[in-house]
Length: 119
Image (cartoon, rainbow, N blue to C red; front, side, top):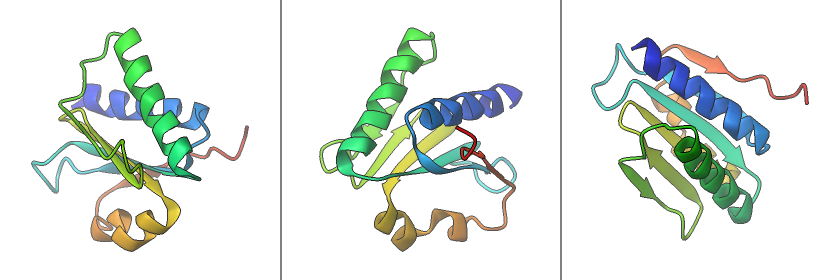
């Protein structure tokens, strides 16, 4: 379990380096068998969303992390999902993130916000 937490935090830091906004880690361990953690971020355009996703895929491969089980949404890039099984990354455009409201849906789980305002 600690490994999936560290992995979620590493992915969040990689997203921060690609200027993802409002990065949030949701701890689902006590609430769902779906995954241990969600990492959620907002991209400012479809190109930005694809760049964040591509960076995660490349960096996770070069750093020896297990490849994702599933990647979805790269073409439209409105909501890109990268499923590492224990950790699922959601890269949203702002209006799409607001519409689906994963942080509201999972509002009762522990949340950790990455303070990326100190660049």
